[in-house]
Image (cartoon, rainbow, N blue to C red; front, side, top):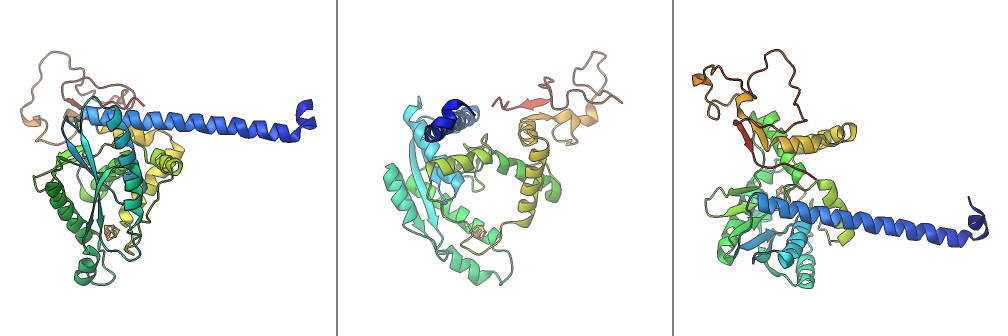
Length: 316
Ligand code: SF4
């Protein structure tokens, strides 16, 4: 403690508070830059938004979709291309849903929006016996309604708020419980073939979205109004990767980046690599089999062999 501290404790406390405030502002500034850069990068890498697009942003009232809309509004103002945004919320008539929250927020942001009201809650309650999981019917109904609304609004893209952690968790869920290596695509045609679905938050860590939502004070609507439990397997896998991340920081990012660095010759999908017809060439193969050796490149190097499908390198 300095002489000044002892003599002016109030002054000292004020200086410390000012310092903390400055540090917090710097952190938020860094976070804002990172979020906007990652979203811009994902959009560019996958050509998610093109000139003249009308992007329908699906808004649930949760932190992720608020952040998605918020960042897209900001990017739209400085993008070199012109595109429109329309925010859409599906009011499923869940008990206690605060119907005024989203319209009030959206008006304050000056963004075009549409609230679609459909009592899917009643349909689900009528068709699914008490105690059974309602999510699969509920989300199927929601999907169909949102596709229809996209068509009615003339939207050319449907933007969803899934982030990096959702993508990694989906990959693990599919591996653990579905026996397939399948994640969640950043961009894909919808299953009805009529829409292009994009996930501009694909490169964003959930932790950053939590901090951004708190900073921006989004009026979050609770996600448990329907009374249904979140998928237990998803909850478990999420908890598992959170534990890994605590013990070995950077693992989630590595798993995520691995999804863009697929070495098909070292997997077992005969559709993706012609195992049945390969022959020794006599020439060295940089990505050939290394027999009994450990793979030194594990997690450290950029694969370069032709059998690598390279989509994205996360340099954040
Ligand atoms: S948690 Fe509720 S609102 Fe969400 S999909 Fe399941 S039933 Fe529908």
